[in-house]
Image (tube, rainbow, N blue to C red; front, side, top):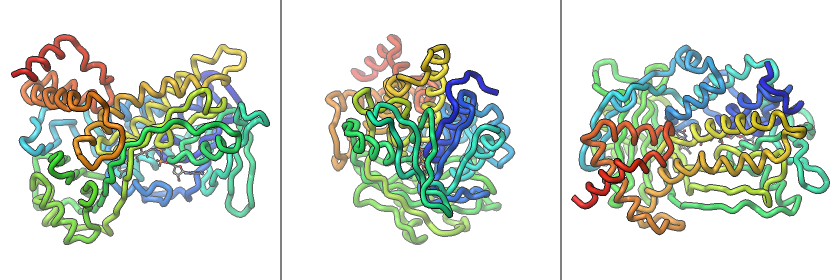
Length: 447
Ligand SMILES: Cc1cc2nc3c(=O)[nH]c(=O)nc-3n(C[C@H](O)[C@H](O)[C@H](O)COP(=O)(O)OP(=O)(O)OC[C@H]3O[C@@H](n4cnc5c(N)ncnc54)[C@H](O)[C@@H]3O)c2cc1C
């Protein structure tokens, strides 16, 4: 049932996490929502070429989980039915720091562990139950269409299987294509400037292997996070349970440190992490399939404003901001943006032309969704001398502040909870501005 009627047809480009979330957000506001996806979408939870990162570990933060549940009310049940594994945040996590392990406390909420292809499959299943949403696979958008004056987007052209090119009319278009090429090509075609970009070059390398969970061994954790020892080395590792009684193990390196894609090299790299927990767990486990690799050159953030973005066009997800995956935020930020879009659209429901002006409004407000995750994920990269980009003036101060917060959290469950809530996008970074907390951090810094 429509919550409010804002238009006839909305088109979403891309059926990644952001595109699926956007389709859920628009479904109650438009007669029809069409998602155009260039890939053939599998009927099982298997990786696909258009989302190659799907072969690597994808954690869903509590803030992203909440946003997705607000868009798809049955999601929690759907995830459990599909085989996602609930783990208690912090309590079930063995988090190895270079100096000490993080205390394990029950913070009162669970996270679901599953592969990225299964997350997509579950959300596609939820969308399939909405009669006015169609996901069209094998449809690659080749161009966005605008009015002759370039002010407003009116549709898209796409290459469909078995035909040359098709045109689709749209009252509203959301570009969630990962790189945003359709939008950038349109801006060039209508002589608008490219959006301002901020880039932080990190040159991360990922290698991911899947193992059967050994029956013979018992562990007192469900997830292992072994952090890098910045600035001495950038080697990191994460082990997570995924559906069908498997572990997914992702190893990460920085610059010339690259985790290998053959098993012996992979194991040797795991052995050289700051702590042996992951290596000890997998050394007797049976590997399944090949080891996948991925290169992540840079975090990129784009700023769209009235000069750049035409009306009725929204850019979301990685196309708007590609975050360093170390903090597992990308899917969650995309889900929060989709929820924001729905809220912004709902504020326009009584306007005579409710869709006019939404683009500028959304992109201005989306920055507040992105600011916190960007600071959390991108700024610590500057601890490594090889990182490229504009180091913030207050970087050293921010680094000292974070270290002091971690020391406080070690002993104080309330600070630990707050840091975890911020990391999970449940609270904004501004929660750290509490006067009493600032006083304690100040005392810690001068101790
Ligand atoms: C190695 C790695 C690990 C990560 N780990 C995590 C994690 O633990 N947790 C987390 O939350 N995030 C993680 N991320 C980030 C996450 O993958 C992205 O932030 C998220 O997928 C963004 O969603 P999106 O919908 O914007 O883009 P995508 O999921 O990339 O989807 C874009 C879609 O658009 C389609 N497409 C592209 N062009 C066209 C076109 N012209 N026409 C039609 N379709 C098109 C593509 O085929 C694709 O399906 C990780 C990323 C990497 C690289």
